[in-house]
Length: 370
Ligand SMILES: Cc1cc2nc3c(=O)[nH]c(=O)nc-3n(C[C@H](O)[C@H](O)[C@H](O)COP(=O)(O)OP(=O)(O)OC[C@H]3O[C@@H](n4cnc5c(N)ncnc54)[C@H](O)[C@@H]3O)c2cc1C
Image (cartoon, rainbow, N blue to C red; front, side, top):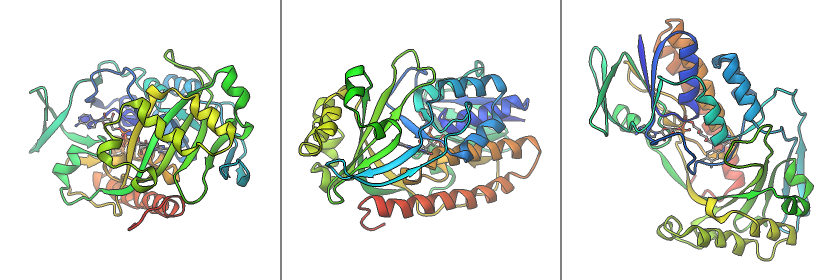
């Protein structure tokens, strides 16, 4: 059996590792031209679901690399008003020395690429497939490949899903985020509220856009950068005061100036942090979600991760669910279980995560019609 996976994101890499470890012939096709750094988001929280899936699919050497490049675990989620009066706080028990509670997406993906030489091909943008006895896969560079099973791990805008399940709807939630990065120099550490170095902290006046801060304190940093504080401004277009055309075409300095403006009369500590950000690392995103996870037709093409169940980040579950899918699909493909059984399990598990993220999203953001 030969398995082709489209997309070397979080789910695709985990599946490729699991299948390679089980001795299955697998190829992973990624449209990015190389593994080099690109804007792809920063800190991702991993739950026990994600940790267990990683332990199930990763060979020991790769698992160790992932642990080494993950961040020191945090123990806090807290909310503050703009003057930094604490509104709520929840503490968590810190796991053992090998526990992974959050990762830097770039460092994580690099670690997950360990040992995939000959499996992972860059610059391969999937265009379409034709499923007959085998699946023929066509790429934008004019080449094609064949496989027995095609896995769509190509994320929220999945082109494979668009062909397999054209009726699937992905909705714009109306919420926009501006992501940024504040390098943790000694001077920045000195002004950072201690809680911001312990976990995910959200600052909001309950009316306008809110700002979240979360630390990325590496066990071993990547070659390209060191510890930083992730900062995210979240609001509707009205709260941010910019149309999408403006937001998504702004020079980066100007984009970050929207965040500076939003916190202008907030606590001096928040203002100092926002001023210390690396504006060139900023980028805007649209939060998108499905409201139903749909079954796809029987056959050799299957969905995984955001391609199957795009969701809001408000339950911290998207990456964890993609990893769960990868572990279950590895099991299905290596124990000769029906692919339909994977689909049924995944529909239930994925829909539960989508529902939770929508419920949290309604409390956290101004979701309007959702
Ligand atoms: C800003 C942000 C913060 C988040 N925070 C969290 C969090 O704290 N916890 C959590 O659990 N989840 C979080 N998520 C969600 C999480 O990132 C996603 O759910 C997860 O990455 C999904 O993994 P995936 O493998 O399905 O897709 P992705 O990781 O998006 O990977 C898709 C891959 O497919 C490639 N690709 C796309 N189209 C093609 C094509 N045509 N041909 C070839 N390759 C293609 C892309 O380049 C990409 O590498 C966050 C998401 C965002 C945007």
